[in-house]
Amino acid sequence: MNAELQTRQEEIVEEFSFYEDWMEKYEQLIEMGKELDALPEQSRLDEHLIRGCQSRVWLLASKDENESVRFQADSDAIITKGLVALMVRVLDGLPPKDIAESDLWFIEKIGLDKHLSPTRANGLNSMVLQMKRYGVAFQAR
Image (cartoon, rainbow, N blue to C red; front, side, top):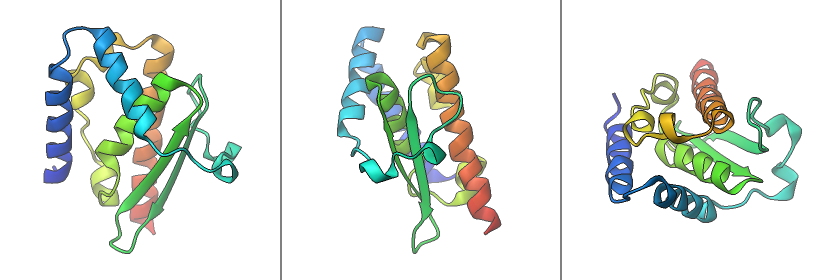
């Protein structure tokens, strides 16, 4: 597994371990969402929407000069924007192969898999799948 990916996941697990309860963890997610740069209006197109999310989540991916995948994302819902910000933080700037094959163990480790509502959990899963699909697609290019 990519060392950078491991480190990022460990950092997130450590950050979330400071919070006693899930209200504090949700507040952390909301803060992460606030720190995510908003997408310009012209990028908020239907073709960039992630299917399977109850809220509207836009995800754009491109390859930079180092052959790494760069993600930009936004959402119209505060917690969902925090979730997508979290995913961007973990996967942005990694090689396509590492994204496509990523084992995102931090999701379970911080308890997101158990504490999100079923619709948010489906949305998070859709985000992960879409990001991995971009990894696969950019490997093929």
